[in-house]
Amino acid sequence: MKNNQLQNLYPIFCRGHSGGRLICDAFIRNKIDMGKVAIERKDTSFFSIRNPIIREIILNAYDYQDSAPSQQRYYQDLMRRYVTEYRQSEIQSKGHFGWKLGITLFTLPVVLDAFPNAKVIHLIRDGRDVMLSRLEARFAHLDDLVNRLVVFGDATVDHFEGLPLTSETIATYRNELEIRHWVTAVKYGLKGRAYNERYLEVKYEEVCQNPIPVFSQIFDFIEVPFLNSTKTWLAQAVYNTKMDKWKSLPEEKLKKPLEIAGDLLGELGYL
Image (cartoon, rainbow, N blue to C red; front, side, top):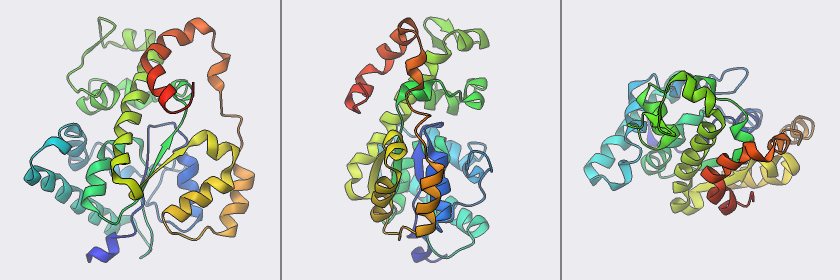
């Protein structure tokens, strides 16, 4: 496949349950091909961690940028090969395309290095709200090294609060584990800031409050016309009732999550 057919690449990166479904749906309605997406979550399952290439890239996410140039090129070649396969098998148009799947946030630097013309959206949502939206598949399989890596930033972690990661421990500390995952994922995504004009941070709350101006910024960033049909759909589809759900929790339930995530919440303007 010619390189120019891989230039119009615009993935959406986010920690799962951060509102990426809305962004992906808007992309699709705005004629950006996102492959074969799941009806409910709009995830592009082609990039599942069941694939050995995606697994390998994610498991080496924290070593990638400090590795030798030859090793970096190895992972870039893997990503180019996989995205080429994706383009050939699932993308119907010859124009703009991308994908959305939360766990692929941990491929962000490899994607941007492998595709010099790619631009990525990093969607961020208040971690306290993300904490309350359960990632069942992730926490049901914390025996998987990839899941441990993306939750803790370290695949070797097998304890939390001094207890082994049993189903009982996970159930007892579910809020704390969910927000730990949010911290790990968002911090990794912030590596995109080093890529300046090819990386755009978007707050989910701002999308909910001002969808048209925020999506105008997004489509200007990726240099794709903002279709009137997409604007009409957004005006009806976006609402802010999914914001600030954490405020229903008693203060005691927020104490430990804030110890884990308070610094990052403050840095991002949520506190």
